[in-house]
Length: 146
Image (spheres, rainbow, N blue to C red):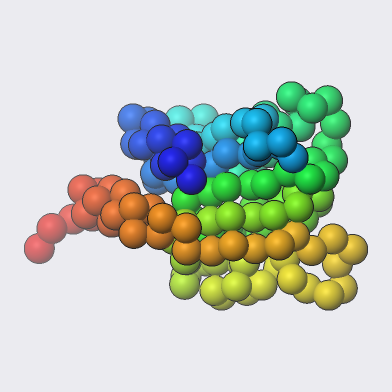
């Protein structure tokens, strides 16, 4: 999670929401990293998880990330939860819960839908205070005062 938090801090440099992600291989080696690039690249799919999953897939040479773990500072949205399921990651570890758009248990629970052929394990709340603080600081700076 510390590596994902470092990625989240990098997103701030491009005025993107500070969310970071890391994909770990079955042996714990870092296969891919990413942070939000929606603003920097004008890409609506430029979420940290998608960036990290793409990098990991390139690193292993295939789209299946079996045995891998996706670590992200904020609970994935529906797009990112779907990408995690489709990439066949074994587990999703996240920091802060997202009551407004979380799709790994908070608002929706995409990854545990029994109709899907793959359901990754989920571990939430890891270093949640640190992840939440990054987001709160960012939004405090970007919201109008008064």
